[in-house]
Length: 411
Image 1 (spheres, rainbow, N blue to C red):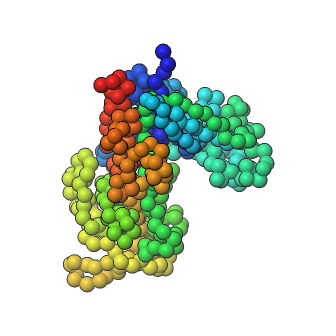
Image 2: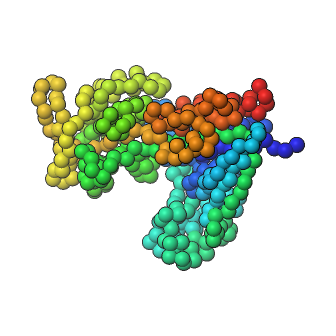
Image 3: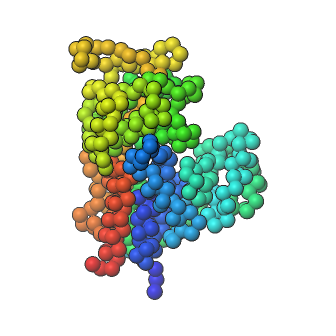
């Protein structure tokens, strides 16, 4: 009997959860991930625990990655994109393009020889995973690979003792007959444009929360990029890239308030003398135990209702932040050592193309929604259909897997 293959588009926490659930139900998922590593953006999330767990959901991601680290119950393909999808009767014919390079999951031992070889050349073509539970732990960044750009023999291939790195002259093409498709393509973090009032990209100590995540994951602390020092005064600015009509993003990204509260508590726990101010429009109480964390932050940090207007450079890398003080009933300016921009979740740029190929709809915010005419054969899950935190993505992924299994069984 022929396998009923389900294509899962996206190898983040949603896609991996869908695949695990389908595999446990006896189905045959194939995860297609365009990047070099599995885990998506959630794999870079750091633990924000203090003296107790703050339910930041990092451990949920680690548990999922650990399940598939060396004995994946489903097939997956990294460095792979979808070039065409067509429907014939009850089946989908999906054309996949892999390469022109990839690391063989079964041969790779995560020894790091490829990464070291690339680093010795002063290049950054080989990237590392954020989690030790990612396998392969290394991947190749096509845009950054100087060997491929110069037409030179890649050093990583020569140094790999297992021969796990494949460099192809052209992408490999494979057509897969699928009986269902789950879209778990995730989101894109908002990036302030080149000219922005926050000074992002111009003031070195103005960074996004995504960059703070990466810093905390890598070094265990959020420090000033300009000098590596622990900041004494920190400002969080909420709703950057969300709830802003001027940039066409009026929706709430939902996860940002909870993120900032947890990170603030983590920083205060690690450095009790740090002075934190959170500028906000209003607090959205999504997530588990939110009220408890909110009450604790009100006791340990300063909450200012209203977003700052101007950001200016001061001596020693400090930033002057001006805002309207309700207490003083006037505009004031305060210096901060570090400013964290709590960025929103944006829909993927490829959503219109994917919607066209699969007959999906797009909501007013740019996220995908299933077609009413074919809501069973194609299921949209996780942040592909709107902002969610990790726990919500996992729940939504399990629901998507259940829907797909029911569809395949004719329920």
